[in-house]
Amino acid sequence: MTEGDSLLAHLLPRYTNRIEDAATDALVYILNKSECARAALNVLVAKTTGASVEHCISFATQVVVSDDRARPDFVGYDGNGEKRVIGESKFWADLGDGQARAYLEQLPSSGPAVLLFVVPDTRIDSLWTDVNRDVGRKPKPSDRVNEGRRRIGLISSSRRRRMIMVGWVDLLANLSQVTTDDPHITSDINQLQGLIRQQEGRVTFVPLKMEDLSPEFPRRMRGLVDLVYEAISRGQNAGWLTVNRGGTPWTYGYGRYFNIPGLEDSLWFGLDYTWEQSLLVLYDQNSGEFTPIHLLTDTDREIVLNNVVSQLKDICDVLKPPAGTRRHRAAKA
Image (cartoon, rainbow, N blue to C red; front, top):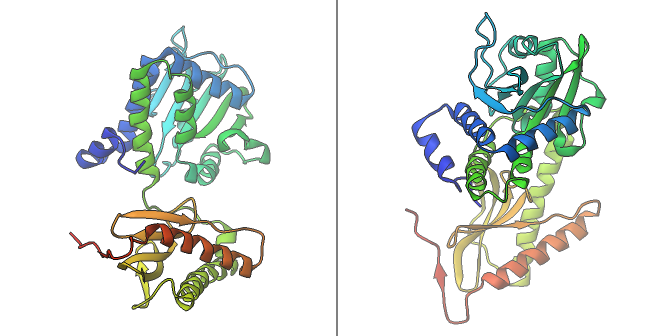
């Protein structure tokens, strides 16, 4: 599946920049439409907090919940009309100063309630730090929940109030699992999942960690580029590929074009930072397809290199046209 694999993902970015609001409206629409989806959210909250929270039976968006006009993205109400979940959904917008604190103050002290953040997986660590700083709480190692990389924090002033942070993918996967018997809701969730995949796939700045700034990071990048060049060189020496131009930078990486018999100047092998399956990929310009080259871990360079060369040759053998035919590089539009 690709970035734009749902109608929602295809249309929304063309007509609005309020993607977070649209995703929130879609989520609330699904929750209000499906009792099973609401139950799944309630179960997720209960499992994450380790305590029972009264079930929400209805949800609303953009509710003004205080005199200072604090406006969370959505609110969940129990059967008595009490707020039990105040929710904030994020993609790439920053957390406003005092935003989490204002929402937290609106949680009722009369019973268990949750401040719920739904965010991209890549922002869970950094936003959890920001949220805790905003409410004057110090994060703890016990905040991390094994399932789905979730976070849970108890509020010291009232153990009946909690903060939870979950990933969009995690949340929608839970809703999807319990709504398979309803094709309409399944379709709605699939539409929203497509939008989430598109937004989480956007190129954005991922907060740095200290280990990212160590000398180890550039050393590993140089090592991977060396693997690319050495693998191409070995294929050239063995005679199953040829090269007629040097290294080629991409927006998201660096590598080399090469030829195999019958397929001229259309294959690229190199480092592509956008792939989650593997940093090294083979790209065929004729088909537009990317094939990951998997890297062995916890082993010596020579073994890794031999394995990369073997994978590269196996793929080239499959791509090679039958004898007597020739495919040229696809013309650019």
